[in-house]
Image 1 (tube, protein in one colour):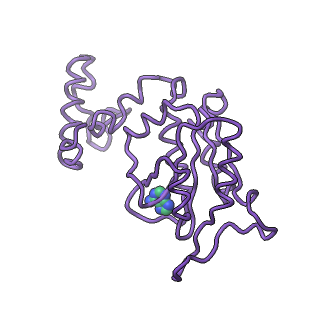
Image 2 (image 1 turned 90 degrees about the vertical axis):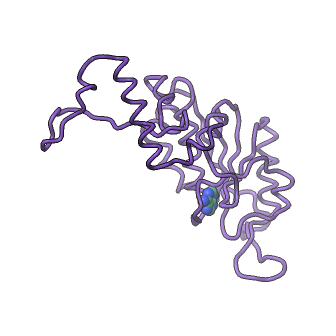
Length: 227
Ligand code: ADE
């Protein structure tokens, strides 16, 4: 999969893709992340990419031409499955959405700043608008990093044990059950007996029960919208 990220702050996005699982995904050529500097597509020598908003009011708006030129340039090279705009007023990101993005071939992610992008770009170019939660970040870069992380780890061959992503929290609308490692006894707190029993079916049942308990207590909404 290839992901082109359009940003005015490419340096901010270097580190998240250079560690751990995403680094491995890139090294194995399962994921290619291409950072595109939006200012390279500015239409004046000041490298301007934002302007005052019509109608007045505080805050700048990201201009049409640099973003349109940048996306047109990328589209000349390949077809994209989606052009995603990271914005707090977008659809809230879910595991289900990441699962479906992980099946795509080429994506563009546009990181917004200031008051956001000119509405006409949303009409003309953007196919998905995604928020990572009900709070406002200073820009779309960290949100883009979150989105790419959730997608990258799902690509076949990225995780060592390919089945492990299937048991992540949210994959089946349940939070994960508690997990334990050595020692068996830590400050008088013991690992639940069943996990030491070697009895596979009982362990699975226990895990399911705990996952359900935890979901009911912490995120009952997940059990209500089972789709
Ligand atoms: N840009 C600013 N805040 C954001 C959010 N919560 N999600 C996605 N993009 C954003």
